[in-house]
Structures are given as C-alpha cells and as structure tokens.
Length: 145
Image (cartoon, rainbow, N blue to C red; front, top):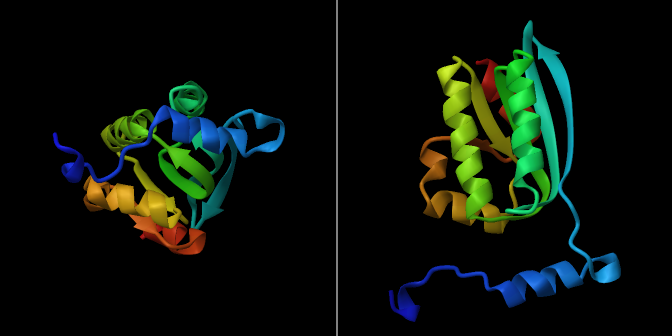
C-alpha cells in the first residue's frame, strides 16, 4: 500500500509521545467503572471508559465485560467520553463483545465518542453495526426501545 492510500497510521513514536504527555511520563491504564441502571424495568450496564484501550489494557476490558455477561447482563452502554485512544485490538474486542452480546439476545451501544474515535468507527463501518449516540441518555433510550 502506498503512503497516499494510508488514512491513519499511528507509529510507536506517536504512541510514546502521547503516553509521555501524561504525568510521570507513563501511560495511563484503562479506568473502567460500571453501574447497573434499571430503566422501565430493564437493566442496562453503563460502563465508563477512560484512558487507553490497546494491547496493554484490553485484557482488563475483556475480563470486565465477560464477567458482566456471566452475571447475566444483556444490555451494555459503553460511555467513551474519557477514552483517549483505541487501537485495532480494542476495536476487534469491541466487535467480538458485540457479537457475543447479540448471541445472548442482548444489545450494546456506545456513546460520547471523541471526534477522532467516531471517524475511525465510521471509516471501519462499525457505525452500521453498533448503535452509537452523542449522549448517554439518548443511548439508554436506544437500548430500551
């Protein structure tokens, strides 16, 4: 592939630069918090993501989502407002989790993605598969309707 055909390529130097801009020069880990909200008799697991989803952090994300599925969660809202970076590993995991949730008759939506992540999401065609919303409340409505 020639350089002019490359839409977006993140080099290790760029990732190191991004990581180095954080306090102490170390990469922030992924911060995951979740809460179950009951809306109109339906439970929705709202997951707040902050930091980076890459090969370093995706096992934590995957483990959390698998534990939620094992507990019986079937509706997930991933709020990506605090997500600074997601690489192909994280995007692949997201599609895998989406398929798994759908196989269990569940649903998954994303909300509040940054412009950069939204562009990648659209470019890869994820927006045709996974519901995305500008805000958390719209996403919750989309999951219960």
